Image (tube, rainbow, N blue to C red; front, side, top):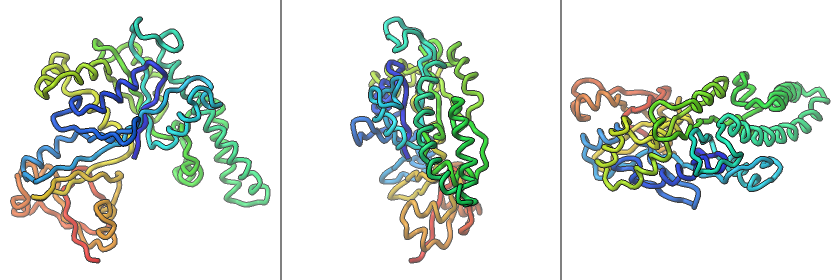
Length: 364
């Protein structure tokens, strides 16, 4: 699962990506691995994993991860191939979610590509290019669907109706994610098109140090501007993240944050938000060899969760032994959890909850 960082030039997206790429910026144990120059795999900060490590004392600990992509900058006309437009649009189409960085700070030393700071205008610049690309995709699909609809094909007639509604919305500068659609229509007709403006988005308001805790007037404009979208919003001072990057020890970083009235680095919040944006959740396995966080979609069943470990676990699934994380934390060990009768045995229909500690029984 990938989340792509997008934004106009000089809004702070590359600085943010570079902060995420440095282990020091997040926590005492927050490594980063570069796959390609603009792609990184970042661990998801999770205090529950640290708690399990302290209780179980395993030989190794493996966290959940999110893949972050620093996508090439965009200029007006990208949908027609201007600048790095074709590369930008191809890269963003491959992601599962979008982290849209908006400049929400004044600084005369950092030139804005359009000459002034206006996050709503910046958002609309990128939105228009993405909408134009989606419109091109929908129109091409409609050409095929119209031919089938003319023959009386009922499915094609239904698809034509849905796509024409999407086309009209895009022509009105609306993002597909903001539209109220029947779930079946979205799954059957919209999802296969991989429309860019249908991807979940988190607007990252890059502010100055003084606005890091509560935001500013620019942030309020963004909040109003995205109110009708099904989107998230995070206030982040990328300049602070860069300063934290320069500090050597975890203790120094914590003192720095406390002086600013912040509980943790904003980049750590961003990673968790990206994980949530991708509709992912975590369950744990805990033993002497390894404590590990496993990533599964929200709503996954016990066999599906087992399949993330190995496909044989899902095929031969018998049952799952489940402990709520809070029970594990409160009682201190698996043995004490069992003694207290807090370990449950669940079958194939069990929907895994975020934070479950699980053992699987299977037979192949």
